[in-house]
Amino acid sequence: MLSKEDQRRFEQITRHLRESDPAFFARLDNRARGRRGRWLMLLTIVLWAALPATTVLAGRLAGAICAVVLVANAAVMWRFRRRWL
Image (cartoon, rainbow, N blue to C red; front, side):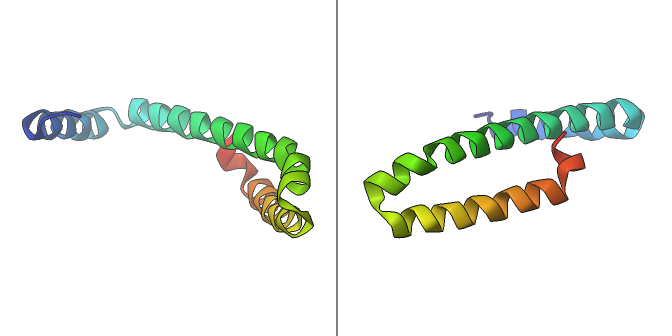
Protein backbone atom coordinates (compact mmCIF):
# COMPACT_ATOMS: atom_id res chain seq x y z
CA MET A 1 0.00 0.00 0.00
CA LEU A 2 1.14 3.47 -0.80
CA SER A 3 0.76 6.30 1.63
CA LYS A 4 -1.78 8.96 0.74
CA GLU A 5 0.98 11.31 -0.37
CA ASP A 6 2.59 8.61 -2.53
CA GLN A 7 -0.80 7.67 -4.00
CA ARG A 8 -1.51 11.32 -4.82
CA ARG A 9 1.90 11.69 -6.46
CA PHE A 10 1.42 8.46 -8.44
CA GLU A 11 -1.97 9.67 -9.72
CA GLN A 12 -0.40 12.99 -10.66
CA ILE A 13 2.35 11.24 -12.63
CA THR A 14 -0.20 8.96 -14.30
CA ARG A 15 -2.41 11.90 -15.25
CA HIS A 16 0.59 13.77 -16.69
CA LEU A 17 1.66 10.71 -18.68
CA ARG A 18 -1.86 10.24 -20.03
CA GLU A 19 -1.99 13.86 -21.15
CA SER A 20 1.54 14.12 -22.54
CA ASP A 21 1.78 10.79 -24.39
CA PRO A 22 -1.66 9.23 -24.95
CA ALA A 23 -0.34 6.65 -27.45
CA PHE A 24 2.13 5.23 -24.91
CA PHE A 25 -0.52 5.21 -22.20
CA ALA A 26 -2.96 3.38 -24.50
CA ARG A 27 -0.35 0.69 -25.21
CA LEU A 28 0.19 0.16 -21.49
CA ASP A 29 -3.55 -0.02 -20.90
CA ASN A 30 -3.96 -2.61 -23.68
CA ARG A 31 -1.19 -4.76 -22.22
CA ALA A 32 -2.85 -4.75 -18.80
CA ARG A 33 -6.20 -5.64 -20.37
CA GLY A 34 -4.59 -8.51 -22.27
CA ARG A 35 -2.97 -9.83 -19.12
CA ARG A 36 -6.32 -9.70 -17.32
CA GLY A 37 -7.90 -11.59 -20.22
CA ARG A 38 -5.28 -14.32 -20.09
CA TRP A 39 -5.90 -14.81 -16.37
CA LEU A 40 -9.63 -14.99 -16.97
CA MET A 41 -9.10 -17.56 -19.72
CA LEU A 42 -6.84 -19.63 -17.44
CA LEU A 43 -9.42 -19.48 -14.65
CA THR A 44 -12.14 -20.63 -17.06
CA ILE A 45 -10.04 -23.60 -18.20
CA VAL A 46 -9.29 -24.60 -14.61
CA LEU A 47 -12.98 -24.38 -13.69
CA TRP A 48 -13.95 -26.52 -16.71
CA ALA A 49 -11.33 -29.07 -15.67
CA ALA A 50 -12.73 -29.09 -12.12
CA LEU A 51 -16.31 -29.63 -13.30
CA PRO A 52 -16.21 -33.46 -13.18
CA ALA A 53 -14.75 -33.43 -9.67
CA THR A 54 -17.39 -30.91 -8.57
CA THR A 55 -20.11 -33.14 -9.97
CA VAL A 56 -18.77 -36.22 -8.20
CA LEU A 57 -18.08 -34.55 -4.87
CA ALA A 58 -21.00 -32.12 -4.62
CA GLY A 59 -23.64 -33.96 -6.61
CA ARG A 60 -25.38 -33.66 -9.95
CA LEU A 61 -27.27 -30.50 -9.10
CA ALA A 62 -24.11 -28.62 -8.14
CA GLY A 63 -22.38 -29.93 -11.26
CA ALA A 64 -25.29 -28.84 -13.45
CA ILE A 65 -25.33 -25.36 -11.90
CA CYS A 66 -21.57 -25.07 -12.36
CA ALA A 67 -21.87 -26.21 -15.98
CA VAL A 68 -24.59 -23.65 -16.73
CA VAL A 69 -22.49 -20.88 -15.20
CA LEU A 70 -19.45 -21.99 -17.20
CA VAL A 71 -21.44 -22.13 -20.45
CA ALA A 72 -22.68 -18.59 -19.79
CA ASN A 73 -19.09 -17.55 -19.06
CA ALA A 74 -17.92 -19.12 -22.32
CA ALA A 75 -20.68 -17.31 -24.23
CA VAL A 76 -19.71 -13.96 -22.72
CA MET A 77 -16.03 -14.56 -23.40
CA TRP A 78 -16.82 -15.54 -26.99
CA ARG A 79 -18.98 -12.47 -27.47
CA PHE A 80 -16.25 -10.14 -26.20
CA ARG A 81 -13.26 -12.17 -27.44
CA ARG A 82 -11.50 -9.14 -28.92
CA ARG A 83 -11.37 -7.61 -25.47
CA TRP A 84 -9.58 -10.63 -23.93
CA LEU A 85 -6.87 -11.07 -26.53
